[in-house]
Length: 425
Image (tube, rainbow, N blue to C red; front, side, top):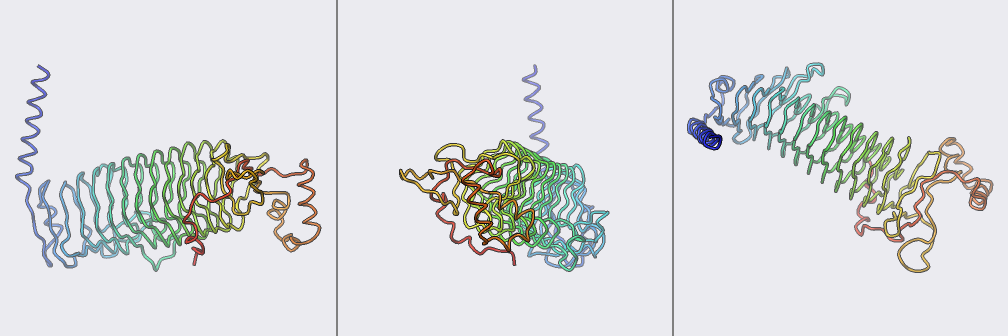
């Protein structure tokens, strides 16, 4: 009986879907028409095609439908409120220029605002320009944000701008192939889980991406440059960060702060103030990353321990590793898994590609200079050189350091040369 009932239920659903599809209509909006009136009159499942022109208003969609621009029409919010607000599930927005939202940070004015429950919305191939927030998504799951160009209010100070894409309390988002610039944070991700961020290009903002309190996300094949920070992961766990490029950021390339159980692999981190800033990180794996030409390659602090750091290349960073801790931190624990350091002064007598002496990142002189920067004027003095010799000869005086017992003699990346000189300008 249950099987028969299930079959009848399935047949009824198919008939309903067929009737829904048969009833769907395509409506055309031309310059001078009242776009909101057409949105109100449309039925669920309809497609509304908007011809090239300029349409001013604070538009609302409250039913599942497709809103498609033909030859890039412009929707303007008139510098007040949200330009387009979505209150329904299964809405598709494509091919539009969406511009001129209001500028209230308190009301979170946006070019496109997805209200709570607006699940499975697709926003693709649009230009969102001169809005406070480009796209705000709040408690809406399984949204897709694809191939949009988003620029903020460039004449506003950074602190007065909104974010390019803001995700709050969502699950299953896909943010793919967007270009975002001149906003506060290009991607702001808060309490957002099981999301995918891939192929985005993020520049000239405070942070390229700012994660907070978000878990089980994938950050892959993205480019972040000319920001204050490329990627900031804060209060998160179970992240995968791989095959990204972050360069020329004035502060850090990748910040890991209060992070656990994550993998950060095969990224290029070049020409930043600090390549990695690692603070309060445990049970993470950092491997296969190219860390090149940064002022500091890795700044490691605040009990960041029990991590696996192997197979990375540290090339021509002014300071390869800055570590302030009370005990040695071991990286690259087995032969063949060591990291490459371009300033390593050891040798490889048996030719197995592994240095015969451990690599130690810091010494007493380094710590002295970090605490008292004015002491740099004495860096070439006989007293400082003597201190370094004494530390090597009498290990009881040595300072805790990052130690790699099996450093690699050659870099793991063959394509490191083009990444020189990618500095913040």
